[in-house]
Image (cartoon, rainbow, N blue to C red; front, side, top):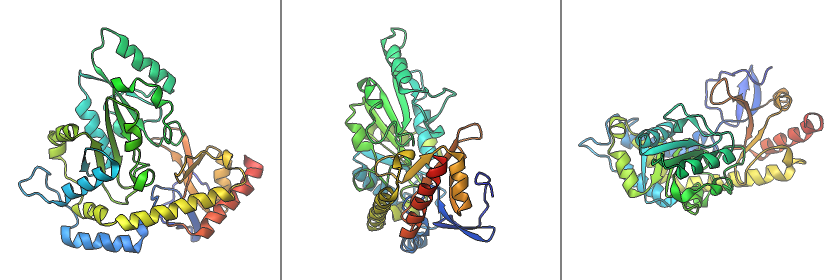
Length: 357
């Protein structure tokens, strides 16, 4: 069985998959807290569906306003540590509304290595290194011909470890002279104080302005996106036709986000224990690429992926974000895994590294 071919299933991919009638342990995807298959979380979501309906297809500018949106946004802003927050129906849309609103003669876009496609508004390519990005930004600022304000886009979690947790390369940029836009989709809900992500950390960089956007589907298990920034910037974004013309996230999802605080906290603690347990049982953790407190473990050895598949372990393994991209292999721990799942993964990595490291 090839580990790189797609496997078609008819259920949510939890900790186990049935492929060709054979159970496989699944260590992929982005369900970091395992919420989508958690019965308590499902029951809470269903109760909110009964109150708010399955979907709300009207504009947020409608003459009928559902209060849960502002309640959830106030909750998120307080959690993250930003002045204000707004939500949309997806993380991709959140990134696009920022890029579209800043796409003008008053701004010049610069993209850090590995920046997600959600933040692109032009065909500009990302810089291959932060050193090249740093030079380009400083040359732009020093040129008398260029009066536009630099906007630097990047992913908080880029799986290379270049950014989170210390953002060392980012801090070499003249941050006090630029707008910083960060996608925290793989961090919020998982890392930071109470799952607040990287916003507070990035405030310490002294950027002229900070905007953080994200998907809420990975860390919080709901279909929605969010943007964090100043009150003025969030007001400007919500006054655009882009925002007014788009349907919002489902209000039931927003209510569940607000109501599931205790569930999120318990799941984060469980995931933290899984990460510590996994690392303590790896004989050569340095052969995997990972970040502090994050459950994704990246590697580039195709033989290792094949070995895991032979032992009925499926990991994330496909070119991302398109077929021209580099093959991405990543073992992802989730709160829905059991201790024996973690033990088996560690055991197979230890065995495989003897031959494939």
